[in-house]
Each structure stands twice: as C-alpha cells, then as structure tokens.
Image (cartoon, rainbow, N blue to C red; front, top):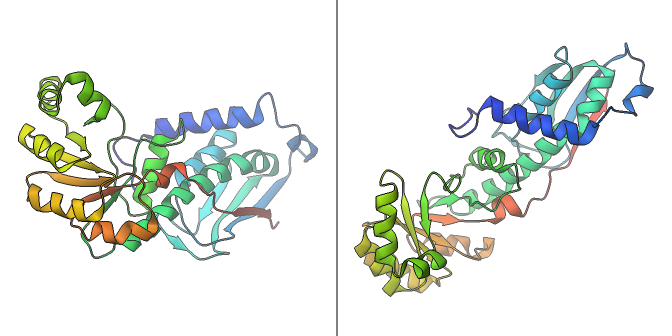
Amino acid sequence: MNLPAYLSTQDIAEQVGLALAEDIGQGDLTASLIPIDGHSTARLITRESAVLSGIAWADEVFRQLDRSIVIDWKVQDGDHLAADSELAIIKGPSRAILSGERTAMNFLQTLSATATITAEYVRAIQGTGTRILDTRKTLPGLRMAQKYAVLCGGGNNHRVGLFDAILIKENHIMAAGSIAAAVAQAKTINDQVMIEVEVETLDELQQALAAGADRIMLDNMDNATMQQAVGITNKQAELEASGGVSMKDLRSIAETGVDYISIGALTKHVHAIDLSLRFID
C-alpha cells in the first residue's frame, strides 16, 4: 500500500531510529558472539492468521543497520495471511540481521495486530454502507503508523490529531457556553476543516444540526435513539456512533443507518501477532 499523506519516509526513519537506539544502546553485546564476517539467510513467518502491516518499518530497520541486507518480501501490506505463511527471506551479515530482528518484528507484530482487528470489524458490517473509523487512542509515538495499519485492515481514519479537524466535546461545549457558540467559534478559527460535535441526546443533535456541524458524534446512544437520529438528520450531516462499541453490537449499530462507527479498540487493545524469524542458512 502507498503511504498516506500524513506519513512520510522520514517519519518512519525517525521512528525506527528511536526504536533501534532503545534496543541496541551503546552496542549489541550478544551479536558480538557471531563472527564479524558471517553471512546468513533467515526466514520470517507468521505463526497465526493476520492482516499484514509494517513492511516499510521492517525495511528501514535493516537499512539503518546495514544497507547490504536484502529482503525478499513474499507478501504486501494489507494481505490476509494464513498461519505459517512465509513473509520474507532476509539475506545479509548475520550480526546486523540479529541486531534488527526484534525491532523489525516489534513493528510488524504491532501494526499487523491493528490491521488484523480492523479487518475483523470491517468484515462484521460488510454490506451495511457504514464505515469503521479509528480514534486518537493510539500508542504514544506510533499514531501515524497505527493509523496507516487501520487503512491496511480496510478501515478509515478519523482526524489524525488536534490540528486537522475540530471535535467539539462536552467540556468544550461547557466552556463555550453552548453548542451553537462552540461551532460558531470553531468556524472563525478554521472553516476549511471538518467540524464535528459530540452529542448525548436528540435535543443536542438538533442544536448541532442548527449550528451547521459537518459531522455529529452520537455518544453512547442506544440503537433505537440512533435510528431516530438518522431520521432527524436526514443527510444534513454525517453521523458517527461512538462509545463502548463491542463486536457483538457492531452490526446492529451499523444497521441503524449511521455513516461511521469509531472504535478505540483498533489501536489501544493491541494483541501482537506472533511472528518468527529463523536462520535457514
């Protein structure tokens, strides 16, 4: 997959550099056990089914350690893989491969975890027309990477951060005095970005519509109320369901007719994918 606009190769290089410094520090003491001129071939596999994400990060790990390392990827980001699938064959200096092994797999196992759970949520609402969104509940320092992983899993990105959209929540409304005042102020700050308002009642929904919100987040509403909200809104704004969404309730929420369902679990409840790298030569 191509990198989204919010993520550059420089971003990836910086993330990888920090991760390698964290792991290697002043030097890899264990790798020094290996002959300095040793060369090896390694095989990378997934031990469980997964949707792959993170190839660019793994490539960058080995590029930073030794540019002579060659990686032959057998798969692409976004591929749905069965357990024991071969991901890549890696050839090069043994020391460098061993020094980068864990950092490369940490990126791959974490991003593939996000892509995999996203794909499960996307599959659960297939055919409804509703789309799955991520949130800002990400691992510190890895937001752009995890948001990319959501795309690999077939999901969609909500705002990247506090800078590219305005989400007016309960505390903002209280501080501004009303939904109307908050939206009006938001439009004076930047009328080129999406303005979204979080509401908890149908009355608040109508206030947000009257104020001209682009999207309205229905926070912790039951399905019957959300269905009413869809009828009241009548396409005047996009609707996003949010708050405590579980897999068992997902499809019934989508069937209310909301445009989006946002799910923090995609990026905060990460269950790393089990990967294995073994020397074969």
